[in-house]
Image (cartoon, rainbow, N blue to C red; front, side, top):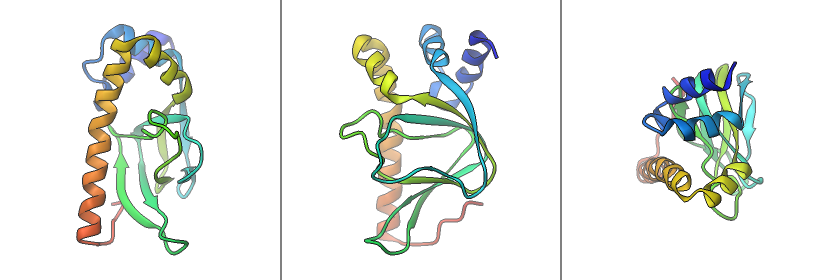
Amino acid sequence: MTLERLARRLESHALLQGLQPKFLRTLAGYSTGTEFKPGQWIFLEGEPADCFYLILDGKVILETGRDGGEALALDCVGAGQFIGWSWLLPPYHWHFSARAVEATKAVFFYGTWLRKQCEEDPEFGFEMVKRMAAVVVRRLETTQRYIRHPAPLSPE
């Protein structure tokens, strides 16, 4: 897929809609397509965070451990959403685990490279922080609702 074609595909993703074309080309240059099988772990809570994924198709469950007990499913993420904001904020470790619950196609981005670009180009950095922060807040609200009213989270 050409850089321009990938940039156009990224532009249609909810996280990146309205992003300047030069920023889309920048992101496209440091991304690659990837796939996950049902049950496959994408990342694990506590491990180093160095990337993020735009979900194109499929479903991913975000989980957190419970003091060595059974994991708690906190959110289900599907097409048009993304996972992995921990690359942006120190200490750069995953705050949740992510596991595909069905065949999932995604676009992978190198977070360590993106952090460098955000620092070197404040306009690009501010755009990425704004877009990621909105999802961080939504995930926090989802977690708070779950804590107040625990209920099984269905990936359906």
